[in-house]
Length: 279
Image (cartoon, rainbow, N blue to C red; front, side, top):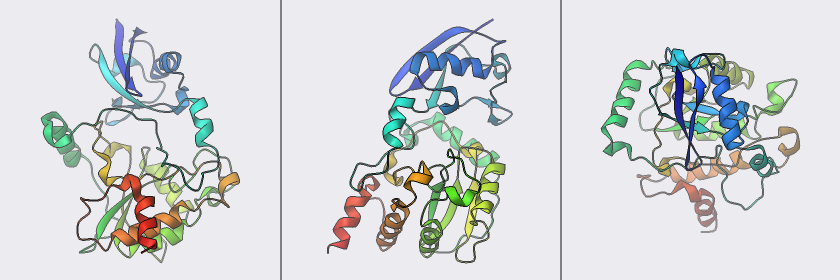
């Protein structure tokens, strides 16, 4: 029996109907590559699950029980697009997104089906509290890949791929925020990397809890609460130049003085920080 899906990426939809139930997730990724130019290893397909976990490449499509023309959102960037991102970060440039997502914003609060997704995730996902939340502290959720750690470059130790000012940043942020670590991968990987970087048991700050890919839902929310910084890539070339966490620590310290964050547009966080520093 044939499998037909619609891939949503970059504001467009791509229809794939040439696969069968005996084909695998990797076969699907190869078909996506033909249509989009995004290499399989750079693709993240949201919503393909097996027993609550992301489907591995060797999983047969028939086992996923996909309905005809199921819509699947892909996250990923073409090689040629990455060449610009991999260059040393400029001092004054627009914020670069970690992923090339140009999807329409879905207002979660107005969509019952999306609220149901959130409710199921809250009910089924078990959060392992590492340290109790502190009264009066805001919550700061940090992505691992390219934010705290260059996970693509090769090195003998994780310390070589750690983003500059990481521990200074976390120490500063901990004064005003409870810290959560998140990554769209397995908890085993997250736990290993945080231990390797000396984050888990650092005496100067504490991690409240960590979230893995199982906590994700395939819904895009407005980005007002998201601060996007330049990705940390090619660590060996950019380690001496990268100051993103140093600047971000200053921004978080500035806005911590505010009673209400709803009026902030984090997209212009560097502009906001520059104005405050010149007052």
